[in-house]
Image 1: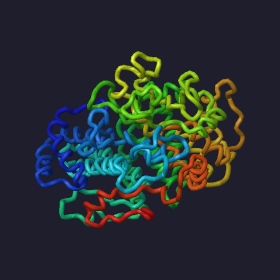
Image 2: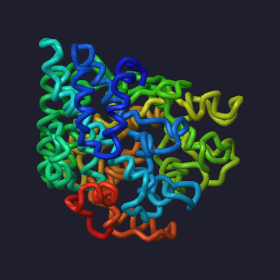
Image 3: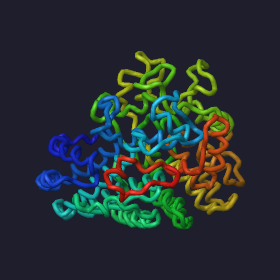
Length: 487
């Protein structure tokens, strides 16, 4: 993230480290005093808000290899999402990072534990901002509150989709509050809190920022919440998508490649930013998506599965060469690599390969983009039915299709089936950590992942749709925190 707040980092580093990995929702008394002493002005509160984004950003694994005192934020997210689908896999079978694509993650998996802790670090920091909001200028308090609540909702939405029932904590708690800290809350109640937080963000924020919370970001996130929650709200999701569409503030990039290498472009609604070459502000996941010419520390992640390559060749159009690479024919169909996130845009032909800062890349993490909104609009209009021929849905779907196949635009679309929509989402949003959630939301995860596991020689059972609650957190809770079934 390019919002580097050195004063904030200097004053609060010891605080966040001290509470970030022992009891990350539970500040120690001396840490709480340090924070209370820091928040003295509006500028301090703003610096604290930027610190919440810093928790999402995470620490570059190339900078600090140990995760004992440094959470990775979203930098491990592809392992918990893409690798648990038919899209991608690790290049080797060794180490805990290869457990995800084989569906053998256990409660001691360090990457799953890190992601859980990272999202709660976001939640803790957001709660802490709310605790000191009165320090901010009166004119900024509503905006800062809405921003903190958007970020808290974002983290909780990730957690409940990956881990199920989780502790719902909306205030800063003390060490004695173990029951509140470690009692799992039903997802329905967590969804209620998420909706409340996002509604406040929608009512308060504008669209000034793309790398911070915004009204459109909250609208898009709430639309996906409505499409995902146990009791679907299709009409609410449709209205939110149409509000974004009708705002005319966002548009598809005409060149698909520009979505990923022209940062904060017209299609981006919310992105988590990184800075190339800056060890403290960069990311390493881009380098780990390489394998045949190894730019990362490991043998390669997000290696493309053959069946995704088949779908891209059939339905990807101009997206295919932007999304995957076989390095000019050097790689077999089951060895293709991700091309969307070449470090800083440099591929293997650069000198050095993948550029001078491959392990300290500045590629943004794209959290929400307009193409996703258009496809959610189709999904909302479809409303769980097998297909739709509604004009609004056809118009939104056609925009995506026309960019992918410009030579035949306007492309003839007269009806959209659920299967066609899921395929379009797959080839449009490949490697953007959406596929796992899409399969679950569309109700086909068991069938698709069982077939994929059989084809690949893995063993899949429905328990794998939820990750295990980290054993470390259960131990810290002294048994208050319970485990998901089957682990």
